[in-house]
Image (cartoon, rainbow, N blue to C red):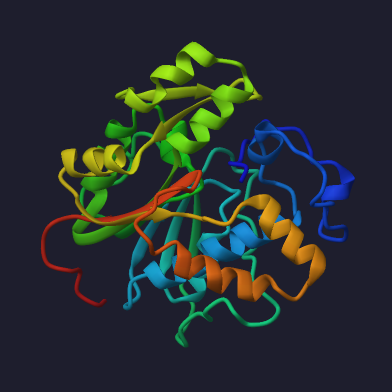
Length: 291
């Protein structure tokens, strides 16, 4: 898996949707993890899984949702199609959320049958949400590793808790210690790697020069509860490896739906082996009333 980075280089031509990468080709951790703007076989699978997970998480009733996940995140159009009004924060007025990625064979759950909501792109800082009043949103999407790129994750989650209504929920995705240790090993940072499993805060340099904060499941649970939110669940975003997905899709290009179904069942286990961790939490209080 490769978390996104706006400053990452463009993928090679052989990693486009028209040409599935040769699964026999060895790749380093950085090559797998450093970018996500490719339409390679693995990343088509990854975003299809994320779309299905979001469809399961979205509130039953239409509401107001704040999206902090950035323009690379494909979930905002899904939430709008499901009837929610979505305020999405963007770093620049020139950027727009990416088009929703769906499966052609219908394995991703369809949006519920209701009138679509509205998408409101707003230029703003996703770290400090001072432009929004407290209790303004029924849900917050902090996907696409945004809280791992905000190294003061506690402060960012505190702001999320503030803008949530009582009973409102947040869906977040962070880099895991599994990913951090893989990148440290590739960079020959062996002294740092030896202390990584016991570190209270693990900061890892990336090939593009940025820094990411990596979490164990226990650590992200502690951060969530420390800001006054109640943890619903934590699970890996994906369990299947990139090489496994690419090998299976190279053999059968129609296997994407089956792989997504397999992943959704596997991710419900208690084994937090994924390089990204997905978590859902809620603000204490009664659930928001339908509008």
